[in-house]
Length: 457
View 1 (cartoon, rainbow, N blue to C red):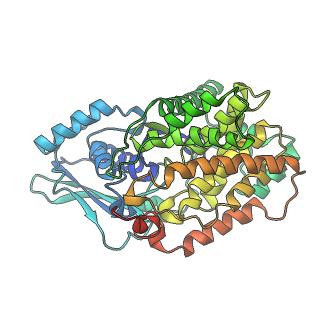
View 2 (cartoon, rainbow, N blue to C red):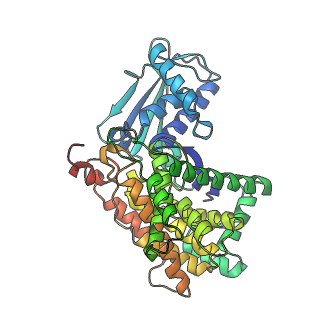
């Protein structure tokens, strides 16, 4: 299955790719179906299930669903317009998406949090319905937000994972073993094979300009996070720390007083800046999810700002390599915290970042695969237990540690010749099995772990 670099990295909004972006995308797809329907629609309803219900308020799932039904999409999201739309919807009890008549929708009664059993396809399920003037349901669709902003209908999920219907790509690897074999035979790097696959679907201009935009949004997000302070929304009264830490690090530069391990603080502060912005509902790039959005940009920023000889011209190589690894994880396991815990989010992001860094540091395909395996292996078993359902504790700091592990993994891999004991494919399969065995309360429901062991929350 072909997963584009623009599938693994998507410009969107915080705080969650699966719980905020996914429901908004699902609502947009539902509206597209209504615009083509041969009947008149008078109203819409939404029902949230599983993790979308349990942690939906903390992840702004309700707001995202409402705005999605009003016609908003993550790529062009405008916070001021969204706030105005929410006020109007609450006052008029209607949504007014383009291309459709005003639709009856009361947020108090037409949006339901169903805390019963999960829907059968995935922990992140939602049902969207259209009604006639009498209030009877005339069209209904079940959607699953499967992580990283990806959305599938029940029918698409039933059809299997490999639903790609595009033109064949020249290097269709579905495992790390196939990836390494194709690299050896072709003499190409992982990034070069990934680039060739991308160019079978889009132009050079679109690919290069799209990747430039991805890094620009990532970098801008870091900068905003380093400039903003205050208290994050949601009720936990979590204080933004990235700005203060960054100011201290800048003040210490050139004083010859800092320990070598201070470089870890630089990596952490870049990641924390992104995830503080994400927690505040700002613009981020899923990498591969919002909850793990800080790891890849922090590692790129570390490379550019702290590695001698680094050059921005190699950022596309980093992104392409990282996307190749992320695609393998998503296809063969999961990038959804609700499905497999945080090993699937920060663990995947760390593997992607380790691979990307190893590539731009001159690593071979075998060393890159080794770097990804090291990073993923040492996140295995990590639970997803956000306090109060907010993408704040432990998520913000966890991204910093994910970046540190990524850099360490890349460095270890570069010290070797690429041969190692555990293949990346085995680590990915182990993550899948671990996620399947993990108790549901540790998979983004906030029913276990830190979420229930922090007093006064």
